[in-house]
Length: 292
Image (tube, rainbow, N blue to C red):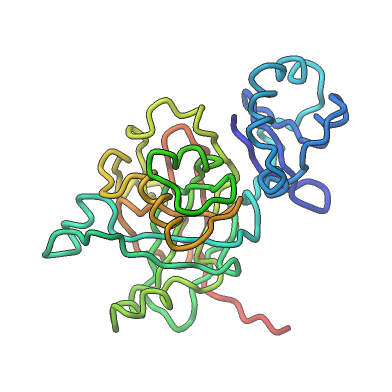
């Protein structure tokens, strides 16, 4: 199932994407007499996703023929949600990138960092370049969305605790990081430095996770491309690894590393393209002064 978030009315609402049409959960509730959550986060927090997927597979056809829908050309995409409890990322997770950036073999454990929810934007929202940084890069990454509260998850059970996958963009102030490798966290946390796609694709929709291609794109040119099969740390290992450190909660996001970064400047458009996912696209602009 492809679960998305759309800007609708005065808020952002959950919808099911089916054959280039979007069916709002609130409309499905009216038609079916159901009580599904009307935002993606509510569906995850209320533990409804698995049951919703089963309903979609068994009974969805009667809804697609009779319920009102929003056509693709009228849909305004939003991030899956605005305030996950945690946004985790890891670095140097593709074989070629690790070789390019390090003269020694990869560490036995991944390099990791966190981002605040104040860094989160969605499709078509502006990446704002901070005045104190002259070299900002964008990195396409496959994101994992946690589906249930969990701790100390064995790698072989990791698939059971995820809701699905999403396209993400991770921005970094490279000049800050270059001054001292210890500044990695600081270089990642600026406002608008994390973009979350509108689409949560459940694992049953992905027949071969290993073959997914992840591409960092700038101004419609593919700059870096690689497949999940070339990851040093597989997504299931990553989920297990982070769950050893802290409890993971529904809606937590884990970025799985990038095939490569590209410098972005005012007027650019950065994209994350992943096989069978809606492209995540963000324009780039200089920071604005905001007084509150």
